[in-house]
Every structure is written in C-alpha cells, then in structure tokens.
Image (tube, rainbow, N blue to C red):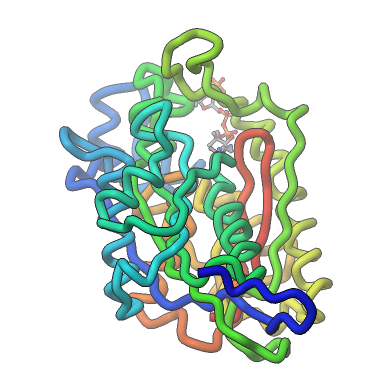
Length: 333
Ligand code: ACO
C-alpha cells in the first residue's frame, strides 16, 4: 500500500475529513463535588471556569469512548473504517499497561490492515498525535489516519485531593486525516505545520505517582498547580509563534484558536498575550473540565457542530502538559 516514491514524490498535506466525539453518560456538576470534598462551585468557576464534567461509569473505558468518537468522526467524514490505515490514540489513561489502546480501538472498529499505536504526551497528546500522523501521511507511507484523544482521568485522580480532583473529566474526540496532493500554498486545506517540544526537567510539577516499573500500581495524579500555570502561558506562546513563522501567516489571519482546555484563565491569558480576539477562541472547559488529550478534539467537535469552524478556516491547536510537553499545529480546515 506504500505510495512512497523517491525523487519526484508528490507534495502531500493531511486534510481533516471529519471530527467526532464521545462523552460518558454521567454528568457531574460542581455542586455535586461539594458533597465529596471541601470545595465550592464559586471557587471552581472563579479559578478554572469549569462548571461540570463527565465521569466514566461501569463499562466505559478509554477505548470504548475512543471507539465511539472514531465512529462519529468517520460518519462526519462520510468514510468507511476500511479507508483507515493508521490509528493513533493519544492517552495517558490506557485501558491496560499493554497492549496499546489504539490496537483495542482498531479491533473494535474491525480494521485489520495498517498500523495502530498510542502516543503519550499527557495533555499535549492530541497535538503530538496530529503531528505524528501528519509525518506518516505526508511521507506517502499511509493514506488515511484516525487521530484520537481519549482519557479516563477520573481513574487516576485522588478523590480526596480537592486541589486536583475538581479539575478533570473524561471523554474522547477524534479526527480523520487523509493525505491529499497539494501545490503548497497557504490556502490549500490540511495540516500546514506542527511544532512539538518537551523538557523532562519539569516532571515533578505534574506527574502520576505510580506505574508498572516503579510501584506496580496505577498511581494518582499529582500537580503543583501554580507552577504549571506559571509555565503554561509562556511555553505555548513560543510554539504558536513558531507555527506562524513557519507558514508565513499571522495571528490576524487566524479564524479559530483551539487551545488545550485546562483552565479558562490559562486560555484567556494565552489569547491575550498573542492578541487573539476573544470571539476567535473556542472554549469548552466549562462543559468538560480538563480532559487532557481529549480536550482539543472535543472542542473541535463542538465548534464544528455549532457551525463555527468551516472548511477553509485557519485553525490553531495548541497544548501543554505533563513532562512538560507542549506543541502547536496550524490547520487549514
Ligand atoms: N476548592 C476550594 N479551595 C481550594 C481548592 C478547591 N478545589 N483547591 C485549592 N483550594 C485552596 C487552596 O488550598 C488555597 O488555600 P489557602 O490559600 O488557604 O492555602 C487556595 O485555594 C488557593 O490555592 P492556589 O493553588 O493558590 O489557587 P490558584 O489560584 O493557583 O488556582 C489552580 C489553583 C486552579 C489549580 C491553578 O493553579 C491552575 O489552574 N493551575 C494550572 C493547572 C492546570 O491547568 N493543570 C493542567 C495542566 S495540563 C495537564 O497536563 C494535565
């Protein structure tokens, strides 16, 4: 199936064909959390913008949510599962230590060709997944990818720790990317550029205190909230400027800014620093909480469904997460 041609290889771009999402059945408001930990709706809304989140129940796992999101994205694309030859699942909450959740999704969808694997970059996972798929598709080695961000963070939260448990939610979002030939102008559809970074020195600011090779437990999420906040805005600004520089585009041309949905204050501060008008910012953290790798495709799904994101729009996605990892991708939708 390889289309790899040395020499006069066609110029390819990864075009977004469809987007879809899935949420657990159970919606949990801030008021419900007041019964569980010493917190208040006011505190959560003021500090984070979060009003509710969805939490996975019995039978709902990262792979079941991912599979539902993938089916929705394929339906939106008007494509069949057999068109897919690459499945990437970005997650930090896999169903099992192994095999990769992507292979579970691949089997659930009935795909028996191509390749499926997970990427692990915590909240930046979806951006890392898009960048990885883009490299495969634009090399000509693969034709059509499902990139899925899916998480069940509720299962790695310490439900007695009010400083973290109120912030996160579960869910999944997916996009279908297809390699298409282009001439290379800024107006042609597809992923125009992506920029990934990581710096492992920041591990202790946001991590899970367990794992197979250390504690033989799943562990719980631990975070120095203020430190994460302090780094978030500066780091993402850099990779966003890199994306504009690489494509010769500017912030004025941007139609939609779709950041990782961690915290309303981080989103607003980033947009403000970049002089992005508030009406161009897609914010869904109030609906879903921080769903880590799922947050960007969930936001894309909402903004596509309500008619905001349209074909031809210039869309910037960006995220920062544990590691630290951070990245951006600029997409002509
Ligand atoms: N309810 C009520 N009070 C609380 C809660 C809560 N849920 N949590 C903390 N508090 C209290 C603290 O104990 C503290 O009380 P004190 O002053 O008596 O000591 C007070 O509220 C202020 O706490 P801070 O931590 O200073 O609050 P801050 O304004 O920094 O907001 C927050 C905390 C929301 C976590 C903020 O730091 C933040 O958003 N950080 C970034 C977090 C984030 O985005 N993480 C995700 C990164 S992406 C990823 O990869 C997962």
